[in-house]
Image (cartoon, rainbow, N blue to C red; front, side, top):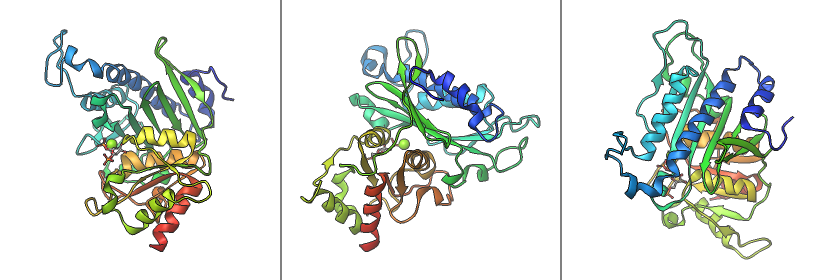
Length: 334
Ligand code: AHM
Ligand code: MG
């Protein structure tokens, strides 16, 4: 039973038995992400001090090289998951290829692979706007004890065993699902612990917020243009409110709490949209569905799309169920 004031550590232990395969491996994995998130949070919080403590490429007072924050976040998550011997493979939005862990060691029995966008929305860091980490976990499909292959990563989103995000915002939160609903934990920075602050998060079925980069309007497909016009029309509870941070994690988080829809459609500039199926869309889709929301490419459920490459992009429409269904209706009828 979850209750408020519970720490993330306690919650993980208490809910471990709800997993199908209870070896504790998935719990250790979530714990590692929790740890890396705290380390990255500490660094992200100092971003405004960049003129004082140095920029990327400089050497800091301890003689350490300063890294760009997205590189730092990437290294931190990869090191934490690798050194603690938790997973058999990692793929990151920041890396060209996947990383196989302990592929030489036949006794290496780890079952899970992680896909991660270590610092999404990083162009927002310089202006003190929230950024996030997104992660997605699958059971490998190739035999344990052998090196992972691309097949282990190119799985449909409906095979995910866990997914979540960290939002480094006005407060830092870790929100995740293991397929039993979505729970949100807020970091108490004084103590360094995440506390269960948002149990059983749910998208309201209807919402009044639409989030899309309207600067690209002219390049959008007709169905999306029609849906945007529908959002702006005066009728019933419309016009809706437009809110676009340009940081997927933050836009998603707000829409889940308040009710809303996020759209990153394809356009005449990006034939498949901008967002990555494996690192961004699938984990957000899993969270959305676990929170009674919906995620689609306009026609197809995101989690039913068969990926064909690691860095594949896909149009993304995600949020309150009735809003996503309305947008799909406009796409079908365009
Ligand atoms: P990134 O992975 O390069 O950070 O890009 C992803 C981000 C999302 O967080 C955000 O929703 C989107 O890009 C914003 O894109 P745009 O500036 O084109 O509206
Ligand atoms: Mg990204």
